[in-house]
Picture 1: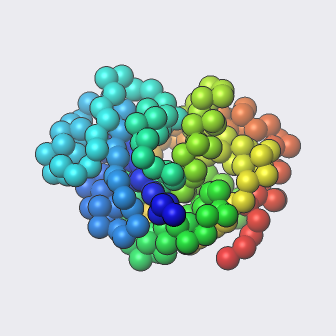
Picture 2 (picture 1 turned 135 degrees about the vertical axis):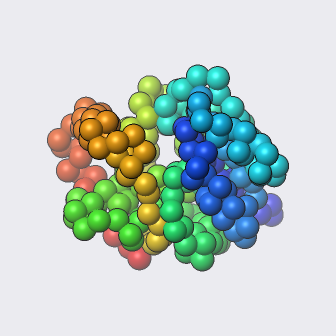
Length: 229
């Protein structure tokens, strides 16, 4: 019986200053068989950082920005030897490698799990109150076949990726579990300034609401995923 194979996929856009910490941890985490990075048309030299500092990372460099969903699709299509895709945001700070490894080990030991969401334990209280730390978490392990179905079946905008995955799992009655992960993401305002950051955050929430509607959003907040630890 062949061992379950997991590949990590890091979509990134203008993360030259932050991506090294994430890639260093992924490359040394037991159970991760491949590490892929999709540079989504960066203009700050992100691709060069990956290429020069991390020769063991498989780099996909897109000539134009496609958004997160487009970058994830481009990378997932290349990961033909992987059963599961571990999605990881490129800007994570203080990522806990032991908790990451524990989640990977849980996934490989139990083939009955279709997706594992890493819920972020370092988020602000208000984010946890509305369950943004797991519903919108960019850190999750998904069956590659499911991820391709999601991204190929309909047009999903970058901000909608996580909730689109959630909706697919609900509709197809997939088995989803959660695992804690201490990490901190960099606020958009820290990257582009407060005004532009607020505009981007507002656009993100409008996009998610447009995709789910009120009923779909409440459904995910109250039910998904089953709160098992």
